[in-house]
Figure 1 (cartoon, helix red, strand yellow):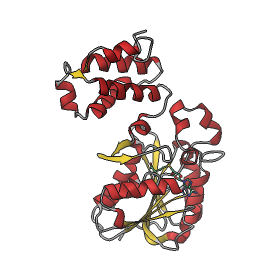
Figure 2: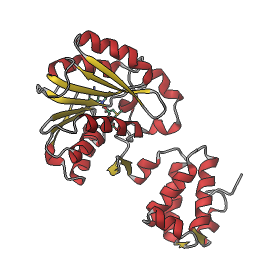
Figure 3: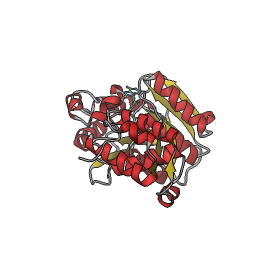
Figure 4: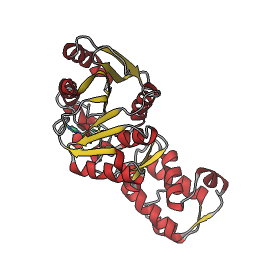
Length: 302
Ligand SMILES: C[S@@+](CC[C@H](N)C(=O)[O-])C[C@H]1O[C@@H](n2cnc3c(N)ncnc32)[C@H](O)[C@@H]1O
């Protein structure tokens, strides 16, 4: 085992000069000893964030000496990280679709799979103006905010059952100058609206309750209501499909992020609720079913 940044020698580490290169090795090996697999990537991020440098500067200044204040900041990050608190919560932000979003323990940390969901909507709506979009279970607001940036003349409705999540989503919308384009609400699914939407998008919880305990320790830091999809994991998404009946137009499209184990069940529900629907499934980069697209009446956007 290599030397840990937090072992008995940590005091000498701070007293001693460290180059970026030696600090990087020390951070990566400390994280590795605590079971963190992406330790090199995280060491890069921690150094770039603390020293406020970009990747090119990181690579080109390997011999630069890190100040004592910066070493102290890095130690406090590592102390939290080795308790398996997610790095995004420690640093307070997570990149999504090339943008930075504020995150805290009231919201799910946005995942790369959700970028595929956004990409799918952007591809589908490329030649349409003035659509209305509902983002159900908005969390940090990544979906609604990214789409609002990319589709300046659309109207957005974004809801979450967590008031703290909605508060953060509003902050993200404000930071990205789209607060005025999104009507944020706190509540259950469609409970706060009677509107019909051209696009309904949702990334609701989809992990079966019984599986939650077996997941990586990092997930225990994320809000339970963002992860727990009920007994088989598909309860909340199933409800959303049922409730969407009152909120679709003849040519609406529903985009749902799902777990691959639920695709057959959710397709059956969609077919039952919307007998004339056309349905597509898109896979993620690992080849798992990940996005369910429903055209409730078999018609595309017009
Ligand atoms: C998996 S997280 C996704 C957050 C965000 N959309 C994203 O993609 O990063 C699911 C979100 O749905 C919210 N949620 C769960 N059940 C809900 C319900 N019945 N009504 C409204 N929001 C709900 C949770 O509070 C959580 O913020």
